[in-house]
Length: 139
Image (cartoon, rainbow, N blue to C red; front, side):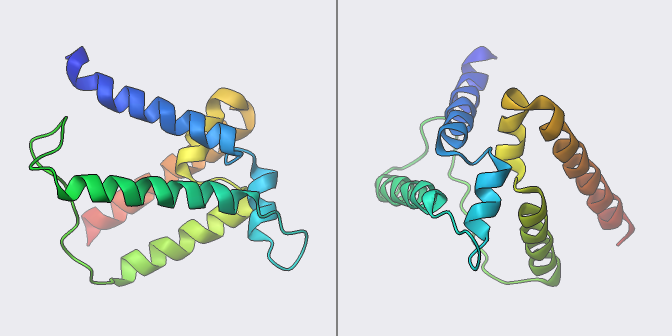
C-alpha cells in the first residue's frame, strides 16, 4: 500500500513546494501577474516557463518508454474537441483565478502557509465541484 502511495505523495509534495517557492501561493503576486495594464509582475512567467521546459523534457523521455514507471499504461488524452462545458469551465477558472489569486494547486498548497485565507478558497472550490457533480447527474 505504501509502495503505491509513495510516488503520488512525493510528486505532490514536490509540486506544492515548487508552487510555494515560485510564489504561486501568494494571491497578490498572482494578481500582479494577471494585471497586464497596471503594475504587471512578470516573475510568474519564469515559473511557468520553467514548468514548460520540464514538461518538454518529460515528453521527450515519455516517447521512448514502453510504459510508465509507476503505472500500467500512460493516460494521455486522445481527443481534442472543444465542448461548451470545457470552454465555460475554463472561463470560470480564469475568472476565479483573477478574483482569488489562487487556482486549485496553489490553493491547496497555501493551506500549509496561510490556512485561514486559503481555507475559504478551498471550501469555495469544493462547493463548486459539488455543484458541477449535481448538474452532471441531472443532465
